[in-house]
Image 1: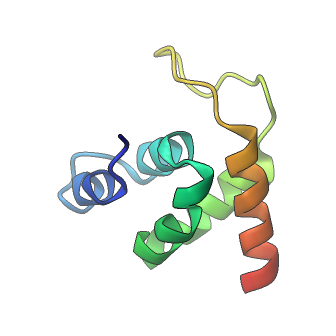
Image 2: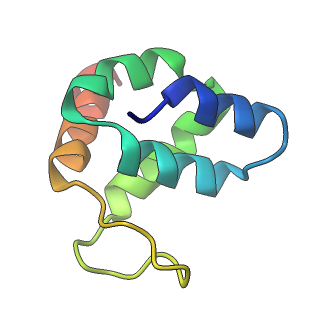
Length: 86
C-alpha cells in the first residue's frame, strides 16, 4: 500500500525533489487518498501539484525511468479539489 506520509517525509528530508514528490503522490494516491493527500501535503508543494494537474496530458512521457501511468481519476479529483478550494 502506498504511504503518503513516507513520501512527504522523504521530500522534507531532502531525499526527493518537489517534482518527484508530486509525481509520486499523484501516481500513488488512490481516489480514496486524495482528501488525505491534500491534508498532508506541505503548502510549498501545492503550486507544483496544481501546475502538474493543469498541464497533465494522458500518455505523455514524464520520465525516462519507466514511470507508472498516472491514474486519470486522480487527476480529475485533484482538479476538482483545486476548483472547489481556491
